[in-house]
Image (cartoon, rainbow, N blue to C red; front, top):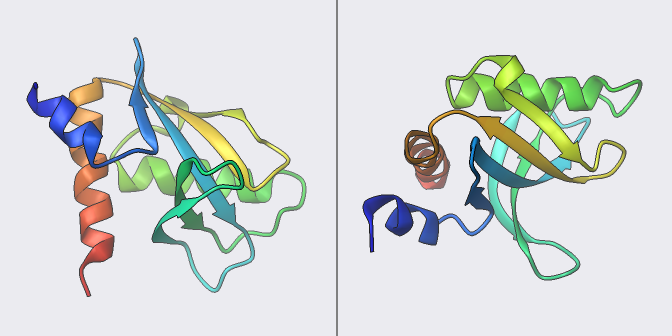
Length: 117
């Protein structure tokens, strides 16, 4: 098993694609502040990264805040983060453009940092 496969095994909400990563997210808008709340299971049992943003779900503000937050956390440009599905719902799929192994490493560090007290 390769090193990036080992990393991906601990990140069941992320999948490498030909152009980067696909990331499953459950978004909570109107939070007190932006943050990462760990991993949750969706209604279908699939894991998703639970993120919250302070922006309200009005006129795309929460989606824009999500893209900005993920881009900043993973040191990407906003144009490298796009919502592929779920623009009007809480469950979303994001495409992250870039080198998949490097993105997996950054994502693993981000999630691990959120688990620490």
